[in-house]
Amino acid sequence: MKPRPPFAIAATGMVALAVAMGIGRFAFTPLLPMMLHDGVVGLAGASWLATANYLGYWLGAMGCALLPWARARWPRLRPVVHTRAIRLGLVATVLLTLGMALPWAAAWPLWRFLAGVASALVFVYSSGWCLQQLTALGAPRLAGLIYVGPGLGITISGLAATALVAAGLRAATGWLAFAALALLLTALVWPQLRGDLAPEAAPSHTTAGSGSGALATLALSYGLAGFGYIITATFLPLIARQSLAGSVWLDLFWPLFGVGVSLGALLTLRIPAQWDRRHLLMGGYTLQALGVVLSLAWPTLAGFALSSFLIGLPFTAITMFALQEVRRLRPVDASAFIGLLTASYGLGQIAGPLLVGLLLNASGDAHRGFSLALQAAAASLWLGVALFGALVHRYPVLRQP
Image 1 (tube, rainbow, N blue to C red):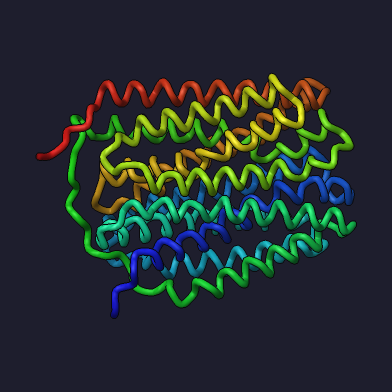
Image 2: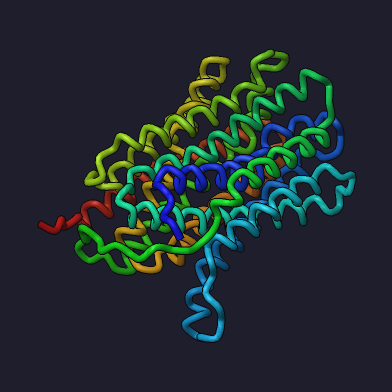
């Protein structure tokens, strides 16, 4: 089989993540105000739909993490072919997005749950496959291109939702349009999804004491990022509507988040490979924490716009840096540890909407409930910065000559 150029590998990963993450997971955010307006779901029900999706994402990631352990215990189990798993997840994303357009509200939590599972499948195996292929081809810096995908999906879905609102269409039409877009993008990358992992390259540097302690702290810190961003990412359009009721710019905050995501991923292409990823993660967490605080301290058009951009800018960069750190610590069979890290992130995402629902019920006031939730989100991101600082101090990188 003729080797594919590195750019084709990175572009395939980019489009796959645009479908699974930008549409399969995050199309819900711009369509939520439309669903509330149509009266097909309430605010509490919306929180549970979000939680169902994040629970599915967590379980899917856990499954990916546990499969290598299961194979070691039962050798007759076949190994996962990454490209087949990606294809399965993409097809499921198309069908489940289409299912949300159907008037079967009782089934929506199940569809969102399964969409979360499919997203995890595509994310874990696309990341593992693409990162290993690029490393074997000597082009690891192109990894940033892969993580432009979620930002593109978020931007396109956000702008499409704005157009749908302007046209006076219903949320069901939005879900139908996004399913069609997901189908088109899936067909685009389908021929590229063949073969499996390339041979592993030897690591160029190690970490002092890079055992379970470093991985556990990395997983905990990454889970805090999941909690820290998810409240704003899920409820940003609703939070903005409380402070800027009637503004014509309300529907542009989410696409602006997506633009930040894509730009941040592109900027990573210029980052030298030898830089310590933990320092970069500290910077990314700091930017997101500032963005969350800004939405509280400056609830104006400019404040929400800058908040959206700051939270989005390091969003997928944080993911890429964390996964590169996993590959540095565990260069062999990294997909299992990518699954573990993704599961930790998923736990944080599950906790976010649940906390919002609890605070909304307890406070009896939407503004106060969202404010308290955002304060908790910012605190979790600052804690993540501190944990990465401790990792740098405890486990310094030892470069090989």
